[in-house]
Image 1: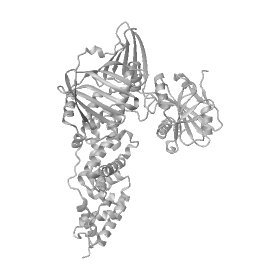
Image 2 (image 1 turned 60 degrees about the horizontal axis):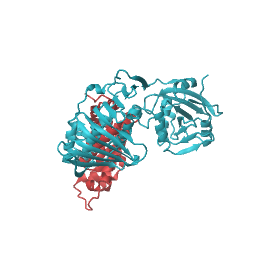
Image 3 (image 1 turned 120 degrees about the horizontal axis):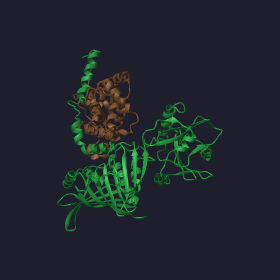
Image 4 (image 1 turned 45 degrees about the vertical axis):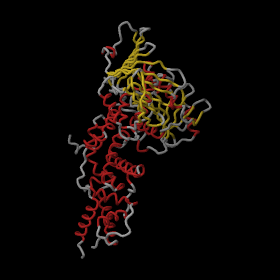
Length: 451
Length: 180
């Protein structure tokens, strides 16, 4: 039988449809949310605590973590951050054990807890223990062995940290403006999420007459959690987080859930009779605009640099803009248009000493690719292409005439510049540069001095 | 919230600003397409749904890294294909041989089983044509929907689909599954 073309087409449609058509395919968002409940919850909390896309030079957490009062927390927070990354990007899920489910249920029924935190380091100075009171995800009090008290309050638009030195009657209040609401990294919250990870039973042990059940969770070679829970209360008694790469162990014990403490203990008001030093970190978005070298000098709290006269520089513009990595704070970018059509940006921004230390620690792990006769060092950046794109985009936004983002090149690259006086700057270039030009450029960097 | 008139970019911005429920709009919009995409690789309905659901989770996790929000659908498609391929390679015991092209058909074909003939014909056409046919017929997706997912124009979809169908018809005829 010979069919007409239209009928053939229709018949073919029917044949294909009957072979592969899926009847009753209905998206069920609620069921999906239920299925991935804990993962979505985790993403939700991360969404509310936005991370910078690249190693940021400064952000609210670095400030909080690196301030003296919270220095002890730094290692713990870093480990937690690493752990967050791990769970965010995968990890095997082999289901929860019943016992672990009970533990999670018990932890979830408590909103606040206190514990003792210690960090044991294989090398270097040991850190004194402290008592940490987590009132909620945004308020914390820390009492250090040496008497220093720290209070962190991240409820408002501006995060506030208060460091009290009772023996000296001194207080340091740090206000971090324009960062929005933040959440405290919470190790108990992390432990709760083991429900969806591979949790190994370790058996039991006795401590102070109590029977404890052990669980181990090792998401990768860098993080190894051991949690001991009370057989009766099903609540954590000890948490140990080994971080072999960092050569340190974070120990949490002396847990007390739903502790009683007067609300004033979490107040960021400094008691009467204290000398108060207030530090403001203003991280509000900055309107990009063209500025002068003199402006850069007056804004920077460290040596400011500009670029000297080079015959191959056709155009030079300085702009200020929001720091494009952390999206907080300002950066000062000097844009250069070279005679071969390359766009090169040198960025510099304010750094506190602890920012600088952290940056140097990070930079020194990267590859040194050039050291000029005058001692300027250039290092690679592990995500140089991304970094260069971000800075070129930022410059393009501030001054589209100088650089059109449509001309973004695949050759783009980044170098971290460390000046002989320790000043750190970033270099982003849209196209490759010869070593000769690169050397000439960084050798030409000259301090901006007051008129 | 009726999300049907809200663009992908707007929905993504809502999600990134903390309103994760706005992801529902994207989920409803692309679920069928993603199941079809995964089915191309896995050729098993339930596994395809599982892969699509995992792809949405992966998308939600990595939403912040998406540079061009208006390209969400094609990005999600890539994620979904990767999830499906991971399911094939990482869990061999679970999925056996799942690429359609790797399927072994019996030496003696039941010429009356035209459905099998169509599935076999899908293996004789190019991967992009196969993807198009599955997207079109798996859940009756419109050209507009397919265009959003594959990032090609509706005119191109029409042209390629006609060519794919001609090739399928030819295969069916040559192998005795269908007489004109």
